[in-house]
Image (cartoon, rainbow, N blue to C red):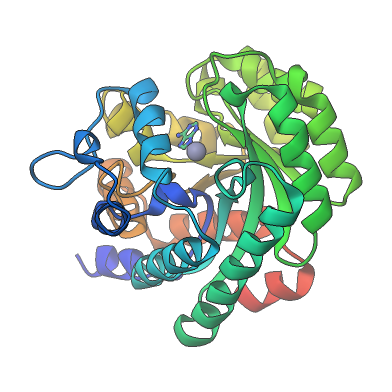
Length: 326
Ligand code: ADE
Ligand code: ZN
């Protein structure tokens, strides 16, 4: 009991969140009302987001982002999500930012959105003690041409706040290698790389992400667990998995947390970290993740301290930031 209390209240490092995916439903409903957009179809009577499966989730996600229009809307979102994350004990967070939703991939427009988001993040860092870094993210089902524009936005704004480049979206569309140009462009701009792989596809997707794109982290990657040689490769190269257990269970990747391979992945020596992905969509928070993992796998405080050390080590930030959060 006492140990569970200590675990839930640990300072937490979270590497895998989608910025718009952290928007509370009430926040999106409020914006829809202000802008006189009818979004009733994406909400349940109890006010939560309504969708049937992952692919419908992506549609509802895009509908929700459609009311986030101005840089000010994104600044307000930033304040709201950092308050919620800080309340969960998160001290360092990385979030996927998609220029597709912020000016449609136009570099000049993107810079205005980014400026507004950064200002809000700076205020939150001062007032709430949470540090945010941005990972610019292309969206796989939007295709590789749009991903090039996204990579150009990333290259133009790479620096102390935009520190990474990634890809989310529908893993069933196209191949990782279709996005080589975008990832090469981002790498040349000094960005660190991650991509969603092995959430919906099998282990070969994870292997392709590492071999074809040269990423140092993988979003999810959990389906690697059926391929021992791949696990060895991930462990040896130190490719870190951004595991989102609550997201996986809610979306039905695994039937329940006790059947989730996270403990097996850790045992295989793969660097594993814990994140929420899109917390209100999956009815989760970092506290809930820690509590559920502690109970299901009987992990103690030292396990969670270890997971946080791994996350700090794999964070896309400079050494000064790393030592400040350690
Ligand atoms: N976009 C937002 N959440 C996602 C997820 N879990 N997988 C892929 N794309 C996403
Ligand atoms: Zn994700």
